[in-house]
Image (cartoon, helix red, strand yellow):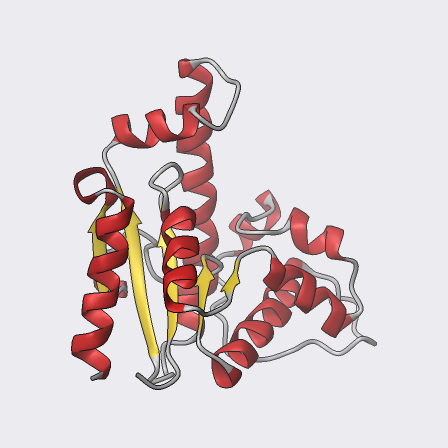
Length: 205
Protein backbone atom coordinates (compact mmCIF):
# COMPACT_ATOMS: atom_id res chain seq x y z
CA UNK A 1 0.00 0.00 0.00
CA UNK A 2 1.35 3.43 -0.93
CA UNK A 3 1.21 6.50 1.29
CA UNK A 4 -2.18 6.77 3.00
CA UNK A 5 -3.65 9.13 5.59
CA UNK A 6 -6.48 8.14 7.94
CA UNK A 7 -8.50 10.90 9.58
CA UNK A 8 -10.59 9.98 12.60
CA UNK A 9 -13.48 12.08 13.90
CA UNK A 10 -14.95 10.78 17.14
CA UNK A 11 -17.65 11.20 19.73
CA UNK A 12 -16.25 11.80 23.20
CA UNK A 13 -15.88 8.47 25.00
CA UNK A 14 -16.18 6.37 21.84
CA UNK A 15 -12.49 5.52 21.92
CA UNK A 16 -11.68 7.10 18.57
CA UNK A 17 -8.35 8.41 19.83
CA UNK A 18 -7.42 5.01 21.27
CA UNK A 19 -8.41 3.31 18.03
CA UNK A 20 -6.29 5.81 16.10
CA UNK A 21 -3.27 5.10 18.28
CA UNK A 22 -3.75 1.35 17.92
CA UNK A 23 -4.11 1.66 14.15
CA UNK A 24 -1.00 3.81 13.81
CA UNK A 25 1.04 1.40 15.91
CA UNK A 26 -0.23 -1.60 13.95
CA UNK A 27 0.58 0.05 10.62
CA UNK A 28 3.89 1.49 11.82
CA UNK A 29 2.95 5.06 10.92
CA UNK A 30 2.88 8.34 12.93
CA UNK A 31 -0.10 9.36 15.03
CA UNK A 32 -1.07 13.03 15.33
CA UNK A 33 -3.44 14.59 17.83
CA UNK A 34 -2.39 17.72 19.75
CA UNK A 35 1.01 17.45 18.07
CA UNK A 36 -0.66 19.17 15.11
CA UNK A 37 -1.22 22.26 17.27
CA UNK A 38 2.42 22.33 18.37
CA UNK A 39 3.57 22.12 14.75
CA UNK A 40 1.15 24.87 13.69
CA UNK A 41 2.43 27.04 16.53
CA UNK A 42 6.02 26.55 15.45
CA UNK A 43 5.15 27.35 11.84
CA UNK A 44 3.15 30.49 12.60
CA UNK A 45 5.09 31.82 15.58
CA UNK A 46 1.81 32.08 17.51
CA UNK A 47 1.96 30.71 21.06
CA UNK A 48 0.73 27.13 21.37
CA UNK A 49 -1.46 28.17 24.30
CA UNK A 50 -3.69 30.11 21.90
CA UNK A 51 -4.00 27.06 19.66
CA UNK A 52 -4.96 24.95 22.68
CA UNK A 53 -7.60 27.44 23.82
CA UNK A 54 -9.25 27.38 20.39
CA UNK A 55 -8.88 23.64 19.82
CA UNK A 56 -12.16 22.16 18.49
CA UNK A 57 -14.27 24.84 20.13
CA UNK A 58 -15.62 28.26 19.18
CA UNK A 59 -15.85 31.51 21.07
CA UNK A 60 -19.47 32.68 21.52
CA UNK A 61 -18.75 35.64 19.22
CA UNK A 62 -17.76 33.28 16.40
CA UNK A 63 -21.14 31.54 16.58
CA UNK A 64 -22.92 34.87 16.21
CA UNK A 65 -20.89 35.72 13.10
CA UNK A 66 -21.89 32.51 11.32
CA UNK A 67 -19.88 29.94 9.41
CA UNK A 68 -16.37 30.71 8.16
CA UNK A 69 -15.84 27.80 5.78
CA UNK A 70 -12.14 27.06 5.31
CA UNK A 71 -10.85 27.95 1.83
CA UNK A 72 -7.12 27.47 2.32
CA UNK A 73 -6.20 31.08 3.05
CA UNK A 74 -3.76 32.46 5.64
CA UNK A 75 -3.89 35.88 7.32
CA UNK A 76 -0.62 37.81 7.21
CA UNK A 77 1.22 38.75 10.45
CA UNK A 78 0.60 42.46 9.80
CA UNK A 79 -3.15 41.96 9.92
CA UNK A 80 -4.93 42.53 13.25
CA UNK A 81 -6.70 39.18 12.81
CA UNK A 82 -3.43 37.27 12.59
CA UNK A 83 -4.02 35.58 15.96
CA UNK A 84 -7.77 35.19 15.50
CA UNK A 85 -9.33 31.76 15.99
CA UNK A 86 -9.99 31.57 12.27
CA UNK A 87 -6.31 32.05 11.46
CA UNK A 88 -5.32 29.55 14.14
CA UNK A 89 -7.50 27.09 12.25
CA UNK A 90 -5.90 28.15 8.95
CA UNK A 91 -2.44 27.30 10.28
CA UNK A 92 -3.68 24.04 11.78
CA UNK A 93 -5.12 23.14 8.37
CA UNK A 94 -1.85 24.07 6.68
CA UNK A 95 -0.03 21.69 9.02
CA UNK A 96 -2.51 18.88 8.35
CA UNK A 97 -2.10 19.31 4.59
CA UNK A 98 1.68 19.26 4.89
CA UNK A 99 1.56 16.00 6.88
CA UNK A 100 -0.73 14.41 4.30
CA UNK A 101 1.59 15.42 1.48
CA UNK A 102 4.70 14.04 3.14
CA UNK A 103 3.80 10.79 4.88
CA UNK A 104 1.35 8.10 5.85
CA UNK A 105 -0.22 8.91 9.22
CA UNK A 106 -3.32 8.93 11.42
CA UNK A 107 -4.79 12.36 12.26
CA UNK A 108 -7.38 12.86 14.98
CA UNK A 109 -10.22 15.41 14.71
CA UNK A 110 -9.80 19.08 13.79
CA UNK A 111 -11.88 18.80 10.59
CA UNK A 112 -9.04 16.86 8.94
CA UNK A 113 -11.52 14.93 6.77
CA UNK A 114 -12.77 18.22 5.27
CA UNK A 115 -9.33 19.83 5.01
CA UNK A 116 -8.07 16.80 3.07
CA UNK A 117 -11.25 16.11 1.09
CA UNK A 118 -9.48 16.63 -2.24
CA UNK A 119 -6.53 14.38 -1.39
CA UNK A 120 -6.87 10.98 -3.13
CA UNK A 121 -4.80 9.17 -0.50
CA UNK A 122 -7.10 9.98 2.45
CA UNK A 123 -9.63 7.73 4.19
CA UNK A 124 -11.98 9.46 6.62
CA UNK A 125 -13.45 7.58 9.59
CA UNK A 126 -16.11 8.52 12.14
CA UNK A 127 -16.17 6.57 15.41
CA UNK A 128 -19.36 6.65 17.45
CA UNK A 129 -20.95 4.59 20.22
CA UNK A 130 -24.11 4.40 22.37
CA UNK A 131 -24.38 6.88 25.23
CA UNK A 132 -23.90 4.16 27.87
CA UNK A 133 -20.66 2.97 26.26
CA UNK A 134 -19.25 6.49 25.95
CA UNK A 135 -20.16 7.22 29.55
CA UNK A 136 -18.51 4.04 30.80
CA UNK A 137 -15.31 4.71 28.87
CA UNK A 138 -15.18 8.35 29.98
CA UNK A 139 -15.75 7.47 33.65
CA UNK A 140 -12.67 5.25 33.58
CA UNK A 141 -10.47 8.25 32.77
CA UNK A 142 -12.10 11.08 34.73
CA UNK A 143 -13.05 11.67 38.36
CA UNK A 144 -16.56 13.06 37.91
CA UNK A 145 -19.99 12.00 39.01
CA UNK A 146 -22.15 10.28 36.41
CA UNK A 147 -24.31 13.39 36.13
CA UNK A 148 -21.28 15.63 35.65
CA UNK A 149 -19.78 13.29 33.07
CA UNK A 150 -22.99 13.12 31.03
CA UNK A 151 -23.03 16.91 30.83
CA UNK A 152 -19.32 16.98 29.99
CA UNK A 153 -19.76 14.51 27.12
CA UNK A 154 -22.75 16.40 25.77
CA UNK A 155 -20.89 19.71 25.99
CA UNK A 156 -17.72 18.35 24.39
CA UNK A 157 -19.60 16.83 21.46
CA UNK A 158 -21.50 20.09 21.00
CA UNK A 159 -18.21 22.01 20.91
CA UNK A 160 -16.89 19.64 18.26
CA UNK A 161 -20.10 19.84 16.25
CA UNK A 162 -20.22 23.65 16.32
CA UNK A 163 -16.51 23.84 15.42
CA UNK A 164 -16.95 21.46 12.51
CA UNK A 165 -19.96 23.29 11.10
CA UNK A 166 -18.26 26.68 11.43
CA UNK A 167 -15.24 25.67 9.36
CA UNK A 168 -16.80 23.15 6.96
CA UNK A 169 -20.42 24.25 6.56
CA UNK A 170 -21.48 20.65 7.26
CA UNK A 171 -22.96 18.79 10.21
CA UNK A 172 -20.30 16.92 12.20
CA UNK A 173 -22.45 13.83 12.78
CA UNK A 174 -23.74 13.61 9.20
CA UNK A 175 -22.28 10.23 8.27
CA UNK A 176 -22.24 11.20 4.58
CA UNK A 177 -19.13 13.26 5.38
CA UNK A 178 -17.06 10.13 6.01
CA UNK A 179 -15.85 7.09 4.11
CA UNK A 180 -16.31 4.70 7.01
CA UNK A 181 -18.43 4.91 10.19
CA UNK A 182 -17.86 2.49 13.05
CA UNK A 183 -19.81 1.75 16.22
CA UNK A 184 -17.04 1.02 18.72
CA UNK A 185 -19.59 0.00 21.33
CA UNK A 186 -20.57 -2.99 19.22
CA UNK A 187 -17.24 -3.80 17.58
CA UNK A 188 -14.74 -3.00 20.32
CA UNK A 189 -11.49 -1.20 19.65
CA UNK A 190 -9.50 -4.06 18.12
CA UNK A 191 -12.21 -4.92 15.60
CA UNK A 192 -12.55 -1.25 14.67
CA UNK A 193 -8.85 -1.29 13.82
CA UNK A 194 -9.34 -4.42 11.73
CA UNK A 195 -12.31 -2.88 9.91
CA UNK A 196 -10.29 0.23 9.02
CA UNK A 197 -7.41 -1.89 7.75
CA UNK A 198 -9.81 -4.01 5.70
CA UNK A 199 -11.30 -0.87 4.15
CA UNK A 200 -7.84 0.43 3.30
CA UNK A 201 -6.91 -2.85 1.63
CA UNK A 202 -10.02 -2.79 -0.53
CA UNK A 203 -9.83 0.86 -1.47
CA UNK A 204 -6.10 1.27 -1.96
CA UNK A 205 -5.14 -2.19 -3.22
